Amino acid sequence: MAATWGEFQAVVQLSAGLNVAILSFVDISLPIIKERRRVFAKAQEELEIHRKNPHKRNGIEKDQHIEAVNVLDKRLFDLWRETTAFENVEDSLMRTTGVMGILGSVLSLGLLWYSALHYNDETSLVGQLLIVLSFCSLVGAFLINFFTASKASHYAKQCNDIRERMRTHL
Image 1 (cartoon, rainbow, N blue to C red):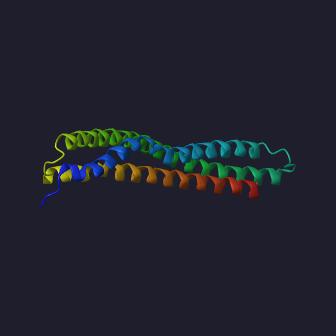
Image 2 (image 1 turned 90 degrees about the vertical axis):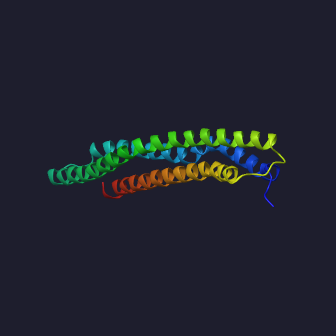
Image 3 (image 1 turned 135 degrees about the horizontal axis):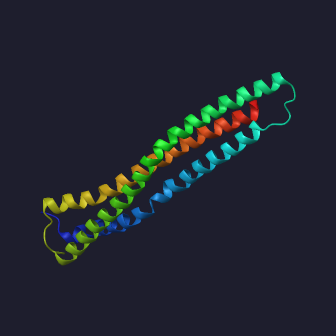
């Protein structure tokens, strides 16, 4: 015996509610992205403070200090360049999450409307596949935001490592 649309309606309702909630998935990665940007700004400020260190008096100390600052400056610049390249991907992934949320919501709400009209009718294989497809946007949006958050966290950690090296070696 095949299942009816009425039997699937709770699943479709869940899909519709979760697909509407996708639009808040950016809250997974947005705080970490903001933190990464804040950490980089703070690292640049700290490097400038170290660059102007007035405590180095003699020529040898000044030369060693300048060399150490330049090494950390290069590491910070290389990391900044790497993260700048990722920012374009980051922005694209955020837009993709929104598109997935809208498409998933439209599909889910359409299925919800259809299931209400055809409550006692049997679901076809296409209908069941559409229900499964309506959940795919959820998985995709979650994975995108989890990936973005983990990558941003990785960059923030690298930047914090450079900041720690500044504190201990400069």
